[in-house]
Amino acid sequence: MNTNILPFEGFSSACVHAGHTQDPNYAHLVPIYASSTFVYDDAEQGMRRFSGQEDGYIYSRWGNPTFREAEQKIAALECFGLQDKNGQALQAEGILQASGMAAITTLLLATLKPGDKILTHFSLYGGTEQIMKNVLPPLGISAVIADLRDASIAAGIIKNDPAIKMIYIETPANPTIQCVDIEVLANTAKEHGLITACDNTFATPYLQQPFKYGVDYIVHSTTKFLNGHGTAIGGVLLGTDIEKMTQHVRLIAKTLGGNANPFDAFLLINGMKTLELRMERHCSNAGKVAGFLQQHPAVAKVNYNGLTSHPDHATAKKQMRHPGAMLSFELKNGLQGGIDFMNKLQMCTRTVSLGTCDTLLSHPASMTHYSVPREERIKYGITDGLIRMSVGIENVNDILKDLEQALQ
Ligand SMILES: *Cc1c(COP(=O)(O)O)cnc(C)c1O
Image 1 (cartoon, rainbow, N blue to C red):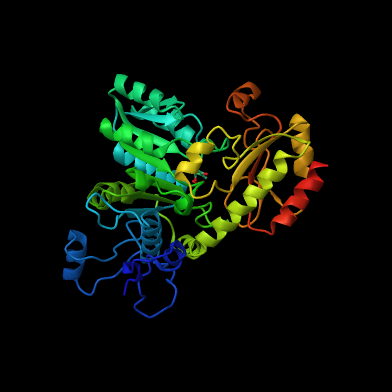
Image 2: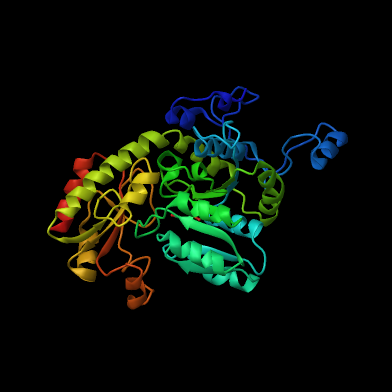
């Protein structure tokens, strides 16, 4: 029995039930299939499995029942309530990977070849930027980096450069919370026969569904809000071209070997059951935190796309259910102000990463971007007193109290 066949009315029901396959031993929850290989009744069955005549698991780098449950659940959430060109429920295929970076690597190596170019926005996750700048160029693939918040810039570049094969976006993006218009960029890409890919990590499918706008591929670092508890590194690559995903892309993924592991897949599946509940609380807390910071005399600026002062407020509002749980703010007292503030935090956690139940704060100038030359990081908006915050699901009054005392 596969309970993801019911058309769920509400997203939270899909979070809890979608993608579940009844266990042959009637376990309620999906078991952790900690097995590298799967056995055959006889040699003929082995033949049928290897030739693809019979479905079944062979080797966990290629696929595993615990991974499958996670893949089906995420695919169901990204397609929730969407229809394909023929008015049927949209279907997507997911491939669970060891990390967000593994999912991005698999995507790029499965879809691009030497001579191809990627058009992307300048505000990207650091690891993705490293792939674009250092890993792909020796393979003959390069990135054209532009401000894609202006759609006319993208259209102009594409028209003049036939080598561009993909538009790759991340929205909202790290750490500026900048947003690009998914619909406009996906339409521009379609006009020119380009592939589109979107990193949906910050938003999650509850807040934003890139497939709605015809995006071809979605990647996630499941490490963040999808897992939601900070218990495992993971990633997923999803696509709506089922044949391409199950054949070519799956073959590349199997060969590259960036597969997940059953225990992390189990943690992810159970984390995702509360996705809607958590995101509602994360976002309502973030709105209150942004409002509090905006009126605080020690704070020079708040970057939160729920505030009308954010330059991408309208884009976020158009494509996101809520503005998300990520924000950043600039302290008036620069580098030392940032360090003092971080040291005074009591309940909130001093760490990088995002998307856990706990509120997390980091100070890029003294942490993630400490080794980046000052002029360079300031160009990207990472000023001395910038603090990045992933707002958690604690009672908001406790978050505000901690911030208040640390800002003293
Ligand atoms: C964390 C992150 C990644 C990388 O994911 P890992 O799971 O750490 O490999 C990619 N994109 C975004 C937006 C992220 O936040």
